[in-house]
Image 1 (cartoon, rainbow, N blue to C red):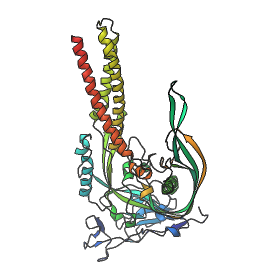
Image 2 (cartoon, helix red, strand yellow; image 1 turned 90 degrees about the vertical axis):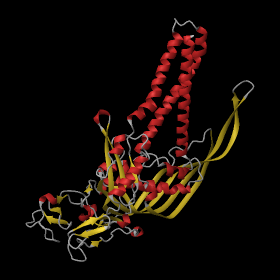
Image 3 (tube, one colour; image 1 turned 120 degrees about the vertical axis):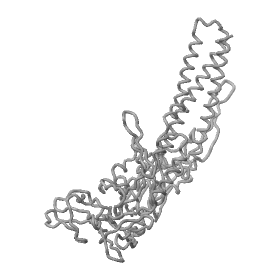
Image 4 (cartoon, rainbow, N blue to C red; image 1 turned 45 degrees about the horizontal axis):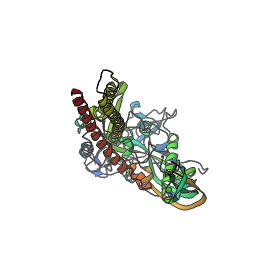
Length: 533
């Protein structure tokens, strides 16, 4: 980062008063899209505060007033005025604690931590009914295996409108990357000794060329958004499905208005509990991911992928702001093992309508799909070895015929059991949407400039397989909660139809399962009939 003094931008504005009568008493009206004056009923709108652009002029680190560290100051205290919504900072020993805008007397119960209030806020745009409609549509698509009470409990009263805290960051950086890439340049057949005396062993091999890569470019990011709540930021928990909140991003940050507490009326809110220095690691990781993603287009010709061993990011300009963004939220606690509850959410972005959720599966689904094949397999194994080694059983010819067939059936049943367990695991992931996340490397407004690239040939080697290079570019996202990219983005980047392949495999598993069950029932019926005769 450029060695300059850290700057600070002031974002606090005077309380917006009614343009008709001058009153400060107003409340937010979603249907009207603005503040409604409590006296004359005039609708007025707060001015926008976060226009896009200007990143190319950033120099040094700039922090807004709302991005200050959250701390209790020994000399200054902050109050939120309940009358006009202003944040008032006074000396701790001040004799008269009153708002300097509306003269309202302030109480110690209205004291808030310094730096806890954001710079801007995005008002709710979608109504509660609209959010409920989107949530019901979401659950309807997953109703087949969903826990019944989850959908029944979803009513208009169970939905909560909440403002969540975020950090909004503009970044101007210079990036230098160095790595490796591989591509297949030929395929041939070679002879390796003999498998049998008169039959040669022919093997297919690939000629693979390795390259050294270098990339040098400028990167500008406008309004990169990160959660500023510790609970929502760490969304990799196996118990709480808080990654759902992350997945409904991005927000239309350019529509944010000046901070005004009156927008909170009728909604819940969660205060920021992370300081800027605690968000630095996530910021740097996401900048690195964005840089890698942008370089995918320069490595398309490498069918075995590219791996970046060294990434150096020089932050030449950075600006921190904080904000409250609106979310409609429905939560449901599912009883789990050891009395731990898995909290399932359906969240709706109250600006864009983006919807994501975690739906609990019915218990009998997991039991039947995976448990029944396992139970049948175990019973069949016991029955097979009982018939095969029972000395009192006299039909030895029947044993010689049926025993090998039963062993083959056992192998098929074990395979079916393993596949069904994997199928249940995948279905659970689909209903919980464990891979859902904010695609910040795609959604963030960004500009790439002054790209310089170098691809230097190094050597050619012979390989027996077509595997990707170790640590290839599409494999990992450091700033995301999940190590793999979203299926759609991975398909777009690599051309590998992962979701289609998985769906085909799922149908194949179901087909094999049905065939195996029918074959097993046929064998059991035949065994009973032969035994009776």
